[in-house]
Length: 98
Image (cartoon, rainbow, N blue to C red):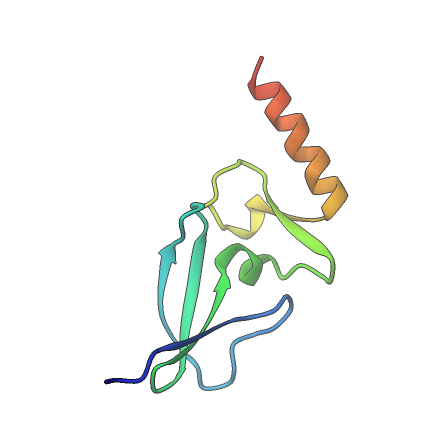
């Protein structure tokens, strides 16, 4: 029986290891794009594309200004504290329901 793949999530602020080869991007069930790098035979690391592009600091979250989860251009992404991100999201939902 072949060995299983090993897929590790990169932590906030981590970059892929030196020599890692990007093997693809896919959309997860929530609609966010994920990047995957191969680090060895059947070994991979993954990260959300918007976090890889925006490079948020510790405790920060990334906000998509246009609310499009696949638009990960730097000009569309803003780093916010968790409480500010929640406030912005609540305001957007209220405005959208009018």
